[in-house]
Length: 164
Image 1 (cartoon, one colour):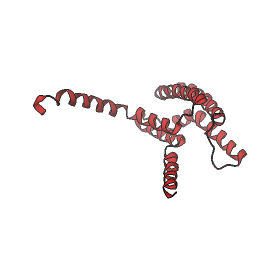
Image 2: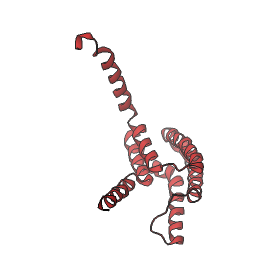
Image 3: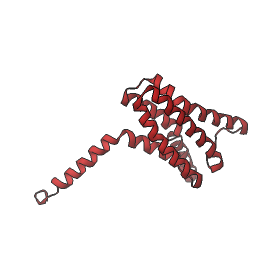
Image 4: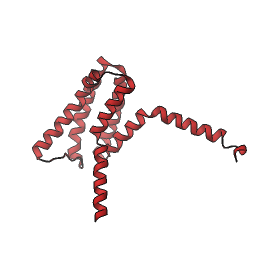
């Protein structure tokens, strides 16, 4: 029994750390740092996407009097995803007026959100893992390319008979 509760506590901590809202916040900070885009333009662009979703979730929590909003069934996920997609389209329109680098990022995000929305309508998709994986892949892409290149180089040139 103690082992089960320790596993549950660990799962709650990991779930909180990989929360999509935290991942979006980290992505915003990384975009600001990597692309050198002002926080004002990021805020103007992403507020149309983030504020309606947070508002809907807070409204649902106040109505249902729960401390947390559950995304376990598809009926509760779908309205949030539709609001997020509409907000993302508005964010892209705003971004076209402000910054083209952010527009490219938001277009990629829109494609991923469309795919996830379609998939989550039929199956349960882990948004925690998806947002965490996308953050790592998007911002570590140069590091991954270098690692792959270095691995292939070592395999081709350092594994010959002279190294045995």
